[in-house]
Length: 130
Image (cartoon, rainbow, N blue to C red; front, side, top):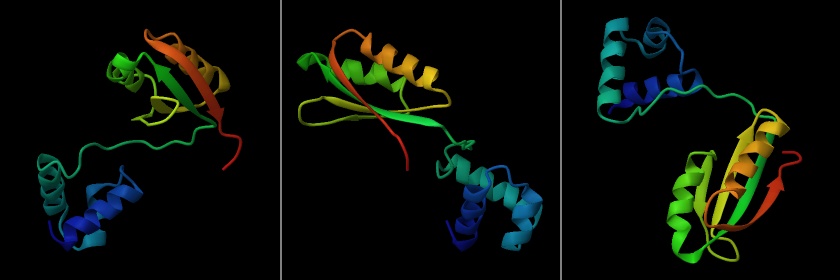
């Protein structure tokens, strides 16, 4: 990976939908050369995926206490529901970040976590402001 690849990555981070022609102008290459470089970056695993970033209106952290021997299983199930999941130390075993567009969607995801097998207790923190 060279400086041009790094600049291509910068452009794509700013706008994952940038056209090859636009990227080519910014990095001083032809459109075909940019296309080949992006394909190579994908093949090497440098670019894992292109995503769409949106703003969410509601965020919460769910702290989860589990049956001691079942934390790993519960973590795997929560990964299907939450945006980020961490096994943590302390009173709770898992911390899950949930992002939602509506309070109803947030509540539904929290309820889904609460209803998982081997979940003993939860505590939810809702973000009020940045």
